Image 1: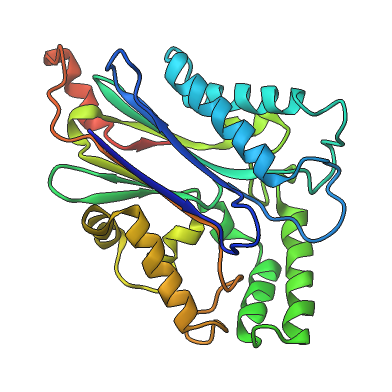
Image 2: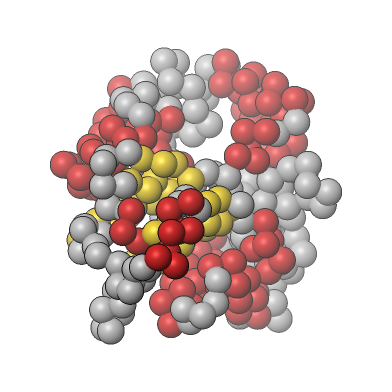
Length: 306
């Protein structure tokens, strides 16, 4: 078992709004990892006196503790309980109904003797590698399915010069359109973890037989730029890069690419630099305990995602 994780703010003058952590219980029975990417609000009132870093640390810590200590709970249930406890910690002094209340994307994975469970909400990613080197990306596709109007606005922002007044105005319009779709009722938008625990039911979840998993790699979208923005390679190449260079090497390579294209001319993106976090868990070879004829269904539902 090997755990490697790194988190770095996009701007050294601002706190990192991501959260990344992992735990290996003293019992030796598996472990868990959690990665959150805080949503940076536009300047102005958010209804909360704390801020995004406080929120992601609270929510991420609560989710990791529940995932490890309450193994009888599903990851969806763990996320729901973590959202509830985090909301209870500041509802008396903050307006949690505000549309810009602190919120975050979520990736969680938990492994034991028999299975590896996963949960993904919004645009962070989880890569699952099997022993043959094949990599499956667990993604929440909702952001890629935004209504056509929002898609056009995003494309317009990326076409305009970085730092220009026109880009600033276009970005403000795009942000307003996205905010109207975030956690909106009716299923036409996308979802993040904020103050409503019911959003946990909308996360992408599933499981894989433990014996079929070699490694897990969780990525905030700032770290996933290696593949998604700069096109250095596919998901399998990204995981292999991290295995060789480490999570710190991954983020260093992303920063190098960002500096080489500061205005987003060659590689359009919403921000010049973004918070970037990654955690690699190499589970290694594992012989499942008690496997027998009754386990044949596990092979059929490998990487079952619902």
